[in-house]
Length: 109
Image 1: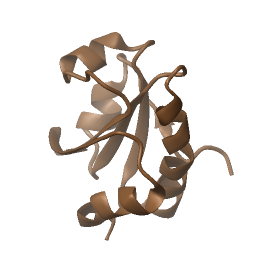
Image 2 (image 1 turned 60 degrees about the horizontal axis):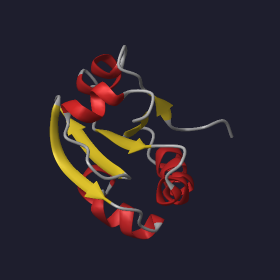
Image 3 (image 1 turned 90 degrees about the vertical axis):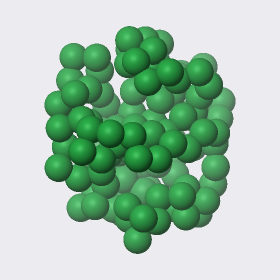
Image 4 (image 1 turned 45 degrees about the horizontal axis):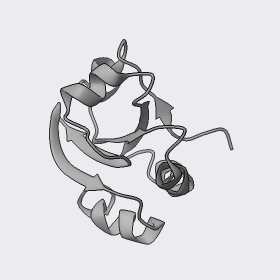
């Protein structure tokens, strides 16, 4: 399966995230971040299993520092859920898939 997650950049963040008609989980990550790489397979699976309910978007903070600064991302991985352009949930730190699904239950349940 090709990646179920979507990549966003400064150029298309508003379109892919803020203007989405369904909730969007944004994973703020970086290539050098071990915990970010650990959580990536779980996010891919959640994206694939819940594609009709939730979009999972990855933002590389090294390549898109403006977005990280706009949302005050100080530690990674940080995952924000956006709904209607607003942050409705923030998850900080790597967690196993089951814990992420519990955190996201109101959006994918």
